[in-house]
Length: 256
Length: 217
Image 1 (cartoon, each protein chain N blue to C red):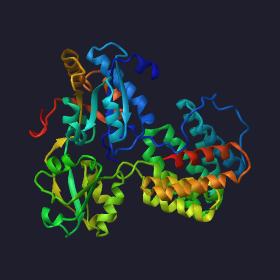
Image 2: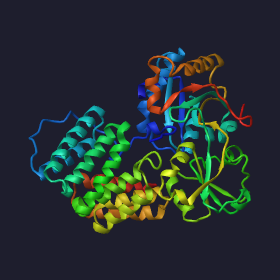
Image 3: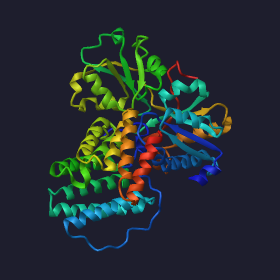
């Protein structure tokens, strides 16, 4: 890996706050993905490296490096940092289980919330809590949160749901996978879905600033769009639960 | 089980990071008694802790699994066999991440039965290992991780064996993960003090290192 990175001219930074997995665990899978991406895009072998960081701060620090030319990030991260990092979407991830888009669901104690205004004084917890702009203006665009709602990141979604079910003034914003699993919880009857987002991208690969020349970016985009549709490339996608990539389809507010 | 973004990279590290490449498992005398089988599983787990080669880790996991099956065939309700079976499943989860969810659920089941059979086995090992699985595994809905339940298990281990450093380290890890920095520092300090009171040994040095690292954060 060290040799590969040393020879790399460009680095793809994966960052997924709130999702499990450490950098050490992920690295072999990322190396495999970077090599396959370079090959299918016609880039020289070893010219694309990849690193992973499971935290927002760590991901931002890595993206600040001059070699970080690409970001592979969840959509909430994109919404929160696209302007600051000058991100230009290249492709949208097509996830094996949920596809390229997903809906987010706001869950609270049954019978407590009658509308957005009744959330005054609430704490909203989510794995996307590091991206309050995404929560207020994308996921809950049609459920206008009172100004005093506090939004916090949590990696402990189960604990957050227990707090809500116990009657604390807590609401939880779930991604599609979490929302689908909600009925399996023993206290599911205590909770109710009160709002749902429109379909939003799950994750994107974006170019950072002007660090990648347009012809190379174009070649990479064409290569990524072929992944999963040509022999061999599927092997590097499956461990990351990816089916392939599609052209970005962003809501108008976040389209570049 | 449904999965989500990047969960494919979530691999449970139940043990320390691999740092020292070693040779493949050596030929050994076939263990036959319950005690020998439990000791063989423990030895495989210790080797796996420091093994960088995934292939060797897979061989160690398979060997531990065979020994656990043999042990459980002899004494299905013995804490040593249930606990050994759980440890073998942990090695299996690490060696084959794609099947980790199933392995970890079986592991938790075996640990619960071991704890019912003999909660004091291996210095409160069933509760301690259960705590580490629940604290470190991917959480709901991707895996069986549940920090609150893990913290409860760590507290049970500490209540049974309050001076055994790994129990205090598990408690510290759980407290740190729930954001209780003060509680975590206190538990790391207690773990360090407990380790310092023990005779010099490789395990003791590992515990001291882990406690010192925890106290730095």
